Length: 114
Length: 115
Image (cartoon, rainbow over the protein chains, first blue to last red):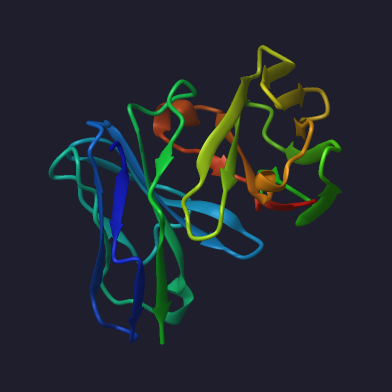
């Protein structure tokens, strides 16, 4: 089944403890992206990747890191999480960026930082 | 600075009637618009899209209208069904972002279709 898989689905952590949210897609998509969803703010893009070893900042990249060493994986790294990073995170992929390639989203990771 | 705005946080309609969800944008360089639907505990799924060279795109019960002069788009669902109850996000691409990888989302509108 074609899908985007995020892990974990739920995560509770404390301020400053490094964490990684994994994202994997099995569709051989070139483009991958991370979003966070917050009440009243909708979905905001954190980072995206046009292909392997190519990443760029979205609208809210502060406090996050990503890497794209392989086509299928695009982990989101929080080196020192803070409470304002408590949010619902979505990973997404598409064959390539452009209007002909709607995004396929994972089911989300709900992160709580205390 | 919210470039894509959905000013109605929620909408409630009766089953069988029309649902109209609205979206406004500020950047005239956006050239492609999409609607996504999101159920609880799931990721958003693509619903319908429209290019700026068109003013209407239809797919079954779903039609998206684009008014470029007003920088406004709307999603019509006819007839509405209880299974349409979800959060709907509009999104816009362009202004070079179709090349740079950015897709700007609105805040979302929660649609409730009552049986």
